[in-house]
Length: 167
Image (cartoon, rainbow, N blue to C red; front, side, top):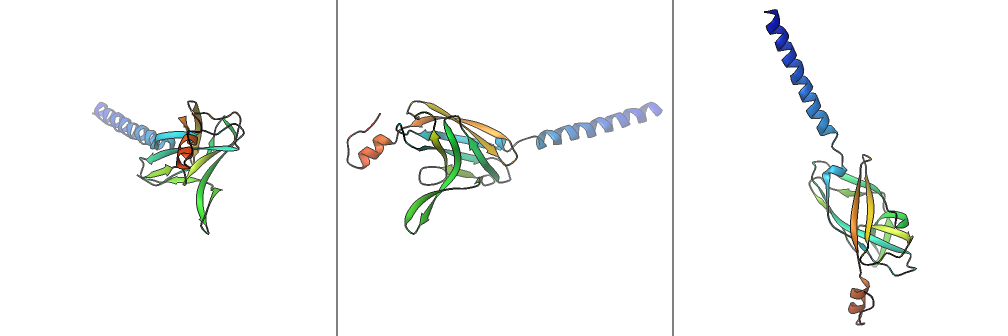
């Protein structure tokens, strides 16, 4: 009889331990794990240009909003989170403290909207390169995003009626 009670106690303790381990594993999931990134790219800049930018689509697969609070990259001296605002009909860029990705939603970093500024590039950022940007989330977790560099200079030249400017 005493042996049966001991076995029951042991099974109960093992069950609680298993539940504890499973709930701890869920608590260890980071915000970086809950963000999926698609279509990342950085903008090519000509030599001597003061800044570039990077863009991407962020999808939050969790039930809570997630904030990106900073970004870093080895390709530039300063990296900032930015948005565009309409100031009496003039579009202006300004630094923001975070980019929020809504719960079970998406945030679009794109030209003319939210983006990550790569200020004072250490070397020219050219089409064909891959740029790495590390995103830091509110919980301290990080995610590295490797992105191709795309040229907008040829498209800008075509929009202004000019011939192809750069490759």
